[in-house]
Structure formats: C-alpha cells, structure tokens
Image (tube, rainbow, N blue to C red; front, top):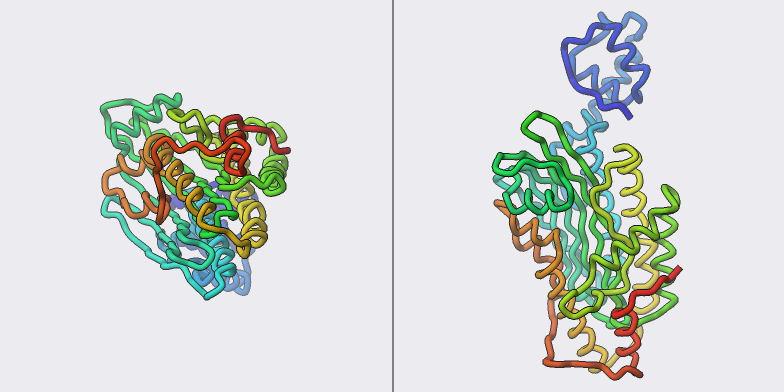
Length: 388
C-alpha cells in the first residue's frame, strides 16, 4: 500500500495518477487534506463527492477499544496508510480482543481497570490490569505509542544488535506496541507473555530506520504435553502462513532468549521470539506481526478453559510461587524491553513493571525431586525440546 503524503503542490494529473494506484478510502483522505475538489476533477460527480466526504468524515468507532486512541482519531483516519497509524489501530484491537476474552473467563464478572495515560515527552499508552480475579490473580494488557529522543543506553543496546546509529547525537524515535503478561490463580493454568512492537529511528541525515519485533511464550507450572503441542502448533501455523522458515528460527531464538543464564534453565517452554524484522518489505512484515498477534487467543484461551476449574493444594501453590520468582529474576535482569522502558526518560514504571506477579517466592536451595511432577517440568526447562 502506498503511503499518501499530504501536499498542495501536486497538479491534478499527478493526483489522478496517484488515485489510480491508491485504495479509494486513502485517496479520499488525500483530497480532503489538500483541499482539492471538483474543479480539479471534472469527472467526479456531486453525488460521488458527497459520498467521498461522508467516508472521510466518518468517526472512528472507539467503542471496540478499551479507551480512546493515543493519537487523535481524525489523524488516524486521515492517513491510515501511515505505518505508525496502522500499528496503533492494530494493537488497540488486539488489546481489546484479548482483554474481553480474559474477562469472559472470570466467574464473578471481574473487569479490567483501564488507565489511559499521557507522557510529557510525547505519546502515551493504555494500561489494562486485573488484580485478585477468580481466574487471573494478576493480568495486564498494555499498549504504548510514544515518541522522544533515544537515551544513550538504548542507542548502545541497538548498536550492539547491528543498528547503524550514531552515538553522541540526539536521535528522535517512535515506538508502539502491545504487551501482556497473564498470571493465573490456578497453578495448572500456564502464564503467557506476548509483545508485538514497531520502532522507528530518524538518523541525522533525515533517513528513517524501522523494524518490527515481538513474540509469544508460555510458562507452565506443571507440564502438560498436549497443552505444549497445541500452543506451539498454533504459533507455527501463524508463522507458516508467511514463511515456513520462520517458526524453527524464531522458536530457537525464543529458547535462547528466555534463558535464566545464572541458573541454566529456561523461564518456560518457549514459543516464538524475533527482533529487527525489516524484510522482505514493510507491508509483509506488518502482516506477519499482525498474524502472530491474532494467534494469541487461540493458542492460550483453550488452556485457560481446560484448567481453570481443576483442584489444587498448598504444594502446587507454593511451587507456582517459586516459579514466579524465576519469572521476576528474568524480567529484572535480562529482559530487553524492561531495560529499554526503565532507561527511557519519562518512563511510566507502573506500566513497565506490570509484568511482575502479585505474589512470588524465593526459597533457599530449593530442588524438587527428579521423579515428581515438578521435577518433570525442570527436565524440560533445563533442556528445551521441540513440540511440533
């Protein structure tokens, strides 16, 4: 899809040629933005012009979201071809769909607390949290759409990944993404984490570098191989629709990334993880990320429904709390997203640390019996395996 840039300098023939290459709704937005009307297009009838204006002036149906968008709705509709705007609309839809799917499993009608916030340095976000639910002890689903200047620590981190960024100069950036961490009450329901994001950096010569990143991973407290296969197969199917090499590559990347190195064990049973996706082109990369984000609900909600009414005792609860302690260790020591958030001026710490569980436990020198169900999980965490 071509990106339409509002400009008054185009002559009618150039605009007409642009309109033939662009979807009608985007072209209509262009007409409104430039102020060009019937004098430039004698072939456009009055009725057609009225229809076009009605289309452009329609209001964004924000009722399907958890809150009003961060970017003004008229701006989002006026240039929907802009990748920044497309990503914002997509992540807001993912946030709302996932929140409502989670709410539907709560037995006493618990709803998300919705907190729409703004950032002085530019942009803002929408944080949605459930605490002390019947099914979800703590569940957070966030979106953020922020602009600003890259802090030096973030530039160094990106340079270490091969980004061609100059140190010692101010680099404006744009970042948007959706992230969620779900800590269920029942130890038989796994924790899930996902994050899908888009990033732009403007270099001193005025050029933009852009890329996508993200992934979805599962952290069970007790191993259910059917659950593991279902989860991984759903992600593999989402990847295979775009490139059959993606799943094995991003599955290994996930296993390597979500590794608690000082303990030589994985945080969970993996999933997919990727960063710096900027090929084969922006449209294809966006479609891939969208497909992965839409695979979250079918990969996870059947597991919630399967286990939410299972009985458990104090032993299972204490083991769940110990594993949550490992989750905290990874997030605070290794997770790049947490570090980037904390490094960024004007960071909203409550939203960044939303990923931490409501309750966790650390026990000195704890080691489960190898023959126990807890020991069975540890074997997989020490040695990741292929599930599909």
